Amino acid sequence: MRQDFVPPRPPLRVFLSPRHAYAPGVMPHRTLSIEELTDYLHLSPGDVERLMREADLPHANRGGRTVFLRSDVDAWASKRILGFSDKRLDIYHAKSVRGTRSIFPHLSLIPDLLQATHIDLALSAKTRASILRDMVALADKTGLVYDARELLASVEEREGLCSTALPGGLALLHSRHHAPYRFEASFIVLGRTIQPIPFGAPDGRPTQLFFLIGCEDDRIHLHTLARLCLMVQKTNIISQLLEAPDATAAYDALVAAEVIVLPSPDEATSGRISV
Image 1 (tube, helix red, strand yellow):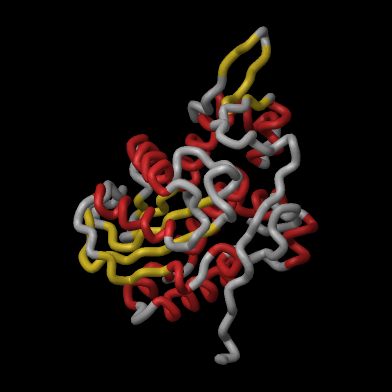
Image 2 (tube, one colour):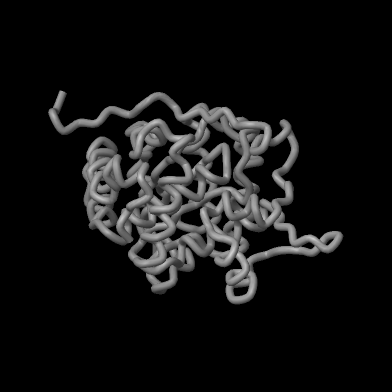
């Protein structure tokens, strides 16, 4: 075994407290108070009020109280994370690291969520519809997806809101909602198409690398999304994945890229993460 090889860990299964759990078969339409939302998004009350005014943070008034529909907030937050500048992403990721320490046993996520067997570097899809089908099929091969047809419908619904493609040729696919009844454990799969596909990227370029993020919980999803975006911004992982000769090389490149963006253990627990 190579000295630099980092083996994948057992599947990440999250046992949610009643506060965060969903009943089986029930969509995550739970409402959050301002206090709950600040904890969920790692924000201050002032930040929440500012985002309601300036960034269209979805909310409603019920009985004189401001409430937030969890599924709407998640879609809004996912879209913002995908579009964050370097500085904003640094700040959110730092807060997310501290806010999810009770969920993740390690600072790194890739070995918990991804395996080389979850990677296919020769997908033949040529259209938006076919790549979504191929990526859900790849996810289904992990054995962690309960209902592949339902997952495909949810991924299609999410892409209908706005494209999850990033500049540079990469997309971060995910479902419209995130709940434990959808997956046996959280995971990531990665696909590379033989030829690039028009996918609505902000830079107008076609997309060739597709991640599909499958998470049991919104907090895991948002943290994973921020981590992958940070890796894209701060490393040359896109070019490495485009050039990777096989799945093992792609996995190793992702593990190494994640190490570059990780805070130190002391920073992650002390709140002194530099941003």
